[in-house]
Length: 259
Image 1: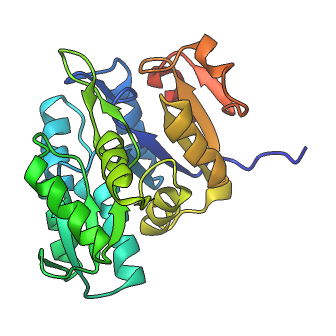
Image 2: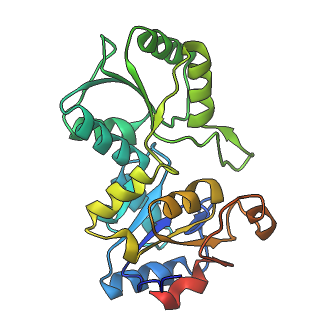
């Protein structure tokens, strides 16, 4: 087996790795500070498309984690990059919030419900039956179906909430059309993120708390992968998957010395 190259750039998931239910995970501040001091390219990634990078920067800053806007990469940005490459200056009917609509506006897309090129489904706090019905009719009329991420549930203090993937399944059932998912575990999100910071997969690492999104995406993008146990995955859970992370650690604090 070929010897791995030194890690020169880092990608890390946010929820479950750096923060958990609105509070920073011990060691997250030290890890981010070490990254910034080292000058190594890095990105904080999230499949959540609700917030803009500026929103997330402010949210993290309130928790003592100082991450520049340009070091935040969301599934909304990955979706916008994909659409801009596929059909520049197109049109879309969007179900989502500011993170997604802003990303599409920034690439020059027109948001409309009149014969759009795409129906784009993202995360939102309030999924409207009326909006879902309109999406179904537009897809049946020929609009292409795009989804920011396949996560079926999201976390809340009261327990799991239905998320983008679950709503996508409803629309697929009604239309017979499966969406193209731009976010993790699609390695497209990782590759566009790496391109954004001028990094290469062979010398990059991905840190995550989920085997089915973070670790799989990192693996398929050709990166080293580190699983932390501060989120949704236990050591026992890893045995259920046919692939493994490069290394499993208790938390982000165990990776500070590797930067």
